[in-house]
Amino acid sequence: MARNINEIKTEIAREFMRNESAAELYGFAPGSEFGDVFGAASVENILIYVWAVCAWTIEQLVSRHKEEVTAELEELIAHRPKWYRDKVLRFMAGKELAHDSDTYDTTGMSEGDIAAARVVKHAVAMESKDASLLTIKVAGESGGVRKPITAEQEKQLKAYINEIKDAGVRTALVNMEADTFGCTVDVYYNAMLEPDTVQTACRDVICDYIENLPFNGEYTNMALIDRLQKVEGVKIVELRGSTAKAANESTTTQINARLTPTAGYFKPGAITVKMIAYDQQE
Image 1 (tube, rainbow, N blue to C red):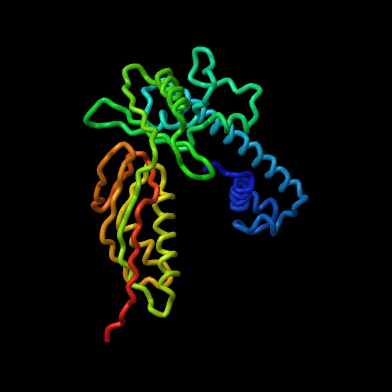
Image 2 (cartoon, rainbow, N blue to C red; image 1 turned 120 degrees about the vertical axis):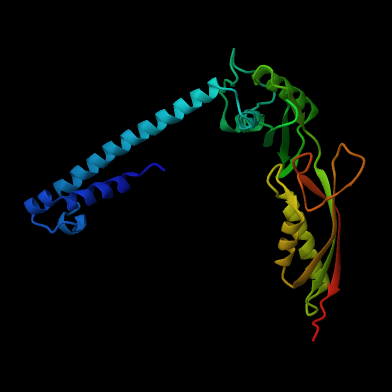
């Protein structure tokens, strides 16, 4: 992490105060605190500040140069999946790429115009190990809810990917409705509480968990149970079963411990929460 000016100044001052020759010249004990010997308006303090600013400027220039060199090197080598993900997130619907380039000319566009044109809000790129195929999953967003981009936007995105991709790379674009998640849960609750209140809280927790997984994040039965165990009034959680159904599939899949959604994200389906009063056994 790059140092700030105060950090650099502190290090310079500390080394200065450790210097035995300086200590003898100024008459302070080696290792003394700089502020105990020199005031804020002293020449020594001002000079050290100036040196710190100079050192900070050099460090910033070196850091920026390193970033520029790294970016240029990445443009010269075969691109990793992350590069494709980042490029897809920069796709602008209804816009042309600059001539002989993989970037857009945004001259005259406001920040709002650019944000509106970038219709892909979520993306991930994954390379298949058993086939020379790069799968790119995407989703748009409306009102904070993930959704597919339109058919026309998908058509433009495919053309964009074909234009920017490395020669010989085969790609598959996934742009589809969310996988439908369902589950059946037995919840043993504190009998001193209203079961409807605890049940509603449990439903909310289930929906919040599946709807807010990271894009293409992995769902796990254990994580869902852990979330439910934290609901006030819940004593025991027994997950009877969980399922998922991809939008392009006609059958429902039983989830065995974990699952990554085909579309990259879930929406709630049939969620059954059976409430059972907890009987404290003697």
